Image (tube, rainbow, N blue to C red; front, top):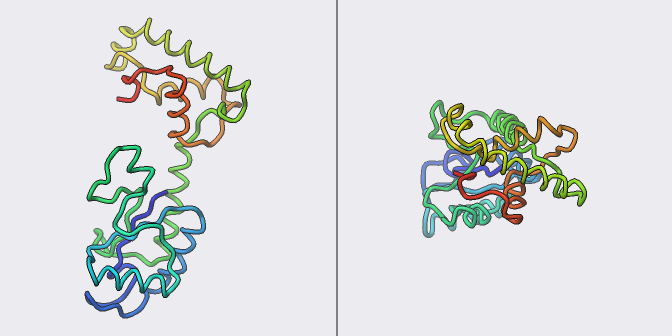
Length: 204
């Protein structure tokens, strides 16, 4: 997951612009998250020399991170935007409602969120096996054509004419539960786009 972390009052002690030492557990748990594969973005209001001081301090202290005040590149490319607000799955900030929990509690919360996040990434493992891929593509084409034929019935039942990509997921998972694996939804979407099976309305 992408984790955006504030600097002042979240990673370090001190009234801005002072840097008066690391908050207990910050370095250890941020590095755990980094080593476990999370994408760490330092998300701070600092700029100019004060931002440089913060970056140098993190580097000197061995706090691991990927970017500072900038979005994860693949995400920017996907949405064709490098928005001013940093996109993240989890934000850590001492100004959040309720204040800043201990870094142990933050770490455990992110672990739980990661379980939820990964549980939503169940898609067919057709990408990994040529025969399954062939069968999967045939299934998708049938799903597409059946959906087109039954669009008026689908609209009456669900309020929109065509099934969404997630509807396709659920149906495939029901039909072939043994053919599923944890692969990201992005890979699944790319697989469909590459074979030109779904029209744009499936992504709206």
